[in-house]
Image 1 (cartoon, helix red, strand yellow):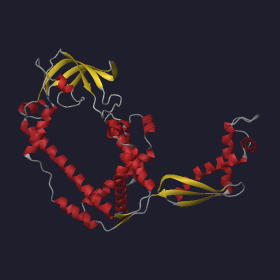
Image 2 (cartoon, one colour; image 1 turned 90 degrees about the vertical axis):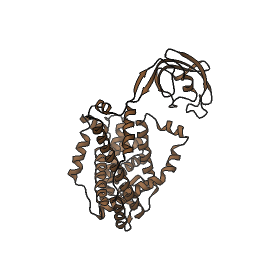
Image 3 (cartoon, one colour; image 1 turned 45 degrees about the vertical axis):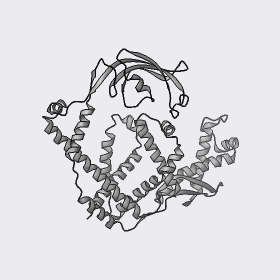
Length: 418
């Protein structure tokens, strides 16, 4: 979209004066304090063209946001400005080329949503006795006990090791550890390592050589032999407790196994309800995406991909991994990810636009007081005011929360249509 903007000489002149003040703060003009030199002196020092160019940048930065607001434009991406008239005593003129959120149109969608709702109305969240048994077993396994034994280490045992790794007799970086726990059979070390530990007893030492896999993430080690020195400090048998009344009571909140079983079953049913609700909503959104007619500008797709990459980067950080490490592991680049994720980005954009269109069609709005109440709950997580000022963009948070609340209201309406 191209927007033409004209700024009157009276307003344009103020920007030139401000540019002169800013320049006078940066350059030294004899006989005048910083920022106090008259405009003609500044112009002689820096040149008229430089002064007008600086003022032109200021006038675009100062007036463009007002133009966007006055015209109620929903712009995306960085605008490209081109000055078309630049002279003293005349109006200042420029044009801006920017992308705007595209107009979207929804084809008839309600019958398809009602059909989906009818399908899910007959579905019930149920769990079988076998599923409950399996979940109880998983809970027991999560509370496995380690019992020290004097025998040789076996597959499935927990061992506690001291080890050091050398390449050509020189210790490698991060290649040593003390009292390192490891469950044999999990395959977390390089191939061949665990096989060397099986059969060792507590107190025994062993030296051996292994070759790192050719696809190992550290390229200087990949495909190369290394020397390992290992001391087994402890061998422990992993014992899973029996699922019984005693086990249920040991967890502290159940009177017996039957009580625990009912609680687990209730939790599993609730989880299945949530899963079913999520699948129901996904199907509704898919139907809306099919119904929407819209042409998406490249800048909007690019921004959505950028958002997705940032979200994924945050997830990786939560798992203790960097994006560079992940890309090295899967042998891809950011560009590769963006190409693969583009269809998903397009779907996300269309889904957001479709929900917005339904909100308009059904006149669904979120009141300011509702948003503010939710904002206060979110901000209450920050204990100090300085934390809020430092970490939170309040207008951005407001818009984000408002959007989330509006989408929730829309989805609630959609999943209850009959």
